[in-house]
Amino acid sequence: MYHIRRVWKVNSGQARNAAKLVKEIAADYSNAGQRSESIVYFNGGTLPSPREDLNRVYMQWTAEVIDSPYREGNKIPPSSAYSKLQELLDNSEGPSSWVEFWEGI
Image (tube, rainbow, N blue to C red):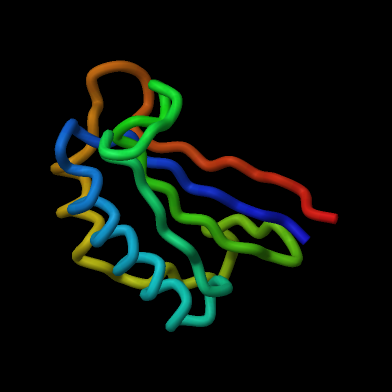
């Protein structure tokens, strides 16, 4: 089993707003049967954390296999939340989003 985590780096003060949009995106994928149910979490600076984790939003889910979302025949669920989320991302230094893969036992 794999644990897959998508990370977004958001502008200061926007973590909660971004997390709400990410939760909407997660529901779209789950409802379309594309993913298991995701958990969404964030730290906007009100909780202790390493400095590099501030203003981050995380969406995490599990999968039995790692499939490309661009595989033939796959239909990515449409979501208006993506364009709204783009407005909240911090593009000032490096990428504003990435995906991490972890193998579970």
